[in-house]
Length: 168
Image 1 (cartoon, one colour):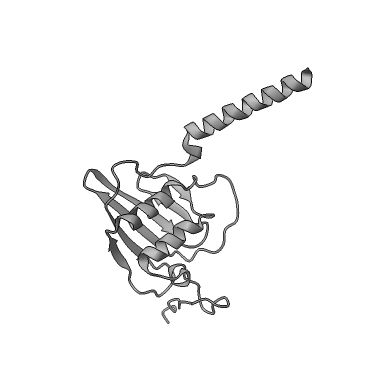
Image 2 (spheres, helix red, strand yellow):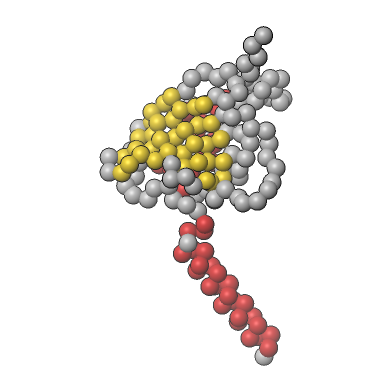
């Protein structure tokens, strides 16, 4: 009887936890719910690389919605201390616009911890989000090697980009 009661109690607690997680949206922070963004302006900050300028406006609804959804499903940036790969400062600024709401921006770090700063000052984490970078590359017609630059000499099979030489 005690084992049956314990099992029932565990199931009730599990169900309650599941309902709580679903009700809070699994801890994700929505960038925008409604109305849908209709245009997206993407610019790149090269950081410590010599990269070609990039400034693109996307009006294709599926691309805009896919990137917005990618960002909306990201978790908050983790708290605490942890190590990240080197960050060369390359970032992409995504500015979503719609006729019925103010513009919303997300600044995505391409390297390092891959943090995202939203215009409302929240921070999200794209460290484990291959879909965001794949969709961003597809929207910009860039390969992953062109989207996320590496310094020269490159890892095997990738492109590399020079860094400015210090003034003599």
